Length: 422
Image (tube, rainbow, N blue to C red; front, side, top):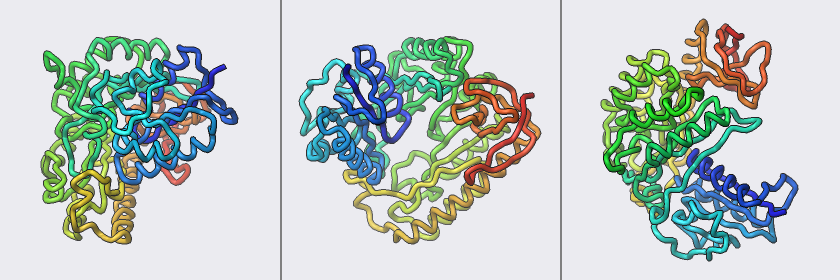
């Protein structure tokens, strides 16, 4: 019996790719190793989005090498692409992303001290099917990025934008529906640029329409979208199609116009605000999330205040706050003017407190509403608007229902809605 183990760090795209690789190995007679079993093959999909993520990926490589001393340990993904030598030194085979799609068929590929360009190989599919504890599926439809934000290494580790053709995406969505996925999360490195590289060029709205037509069951959730790519067309379609979840995650990073310009972001604070307000006007009950980076080079008190004030003024439902972590090889890593670490911690704490206030206010606004809820493996329900719901009586995972929300409570320091079957 051939046993394998696979570990994915970082984004949902990595998770979807890991699930695809696991499925390919199982089709070839491999079995996933149990918690106490030593594997013959170990695959690690690394993350390189920040310096911290890169360190964690290398730590995981060393841990897997210790846990599986006799295994072939293959490190691939973004950080192995960016710095293969670190993984070779950890006793792993470093494999560039261009080999990822065919990895299950080419396990004897040599480690690479200098991997080929990450987009030199085939588009690596990414599909995660539902399981006993997982009611949602993942579908990767896009890879790569050419935005070259000053703080980000990903364009160098993922390569140019590439799109999964619409027919293949629709076929995978139909398979997920047939596998009883109640929700499919659509993901990509730069999802809003899906279709721009296809011939003829296609738009995200066309993809969404094709997916919804491919199977009648799963609801569809979009992962992160750049604010300028949340078009009026996407909003109109989401307003019309109840199977598109009313939930949009729109990275902000900073509310300072000067820092946005320095970081190479293509919008300004007013443009970001306009898109947030457009989403709220089109879909008044939608959940709107944002990413914020704290401690970027050049962030003084005025720049931080601009971020805090912009976030406070917008109808944002929750925040993801990240202290900036320099990534070697990016322009921002060499920029002067980084705030002191204690200052960054204080600013991050202030924004996280603001984020908690906004999340609680959004949850409280759901009381009295009826929400479409799917019960997850945790026993909690996930509403279409991304809120967590505790139902009485409890229901098994995989149930999909309309829930009447009666109150807002708290679990593990986070708000949770309370309700019953409508």
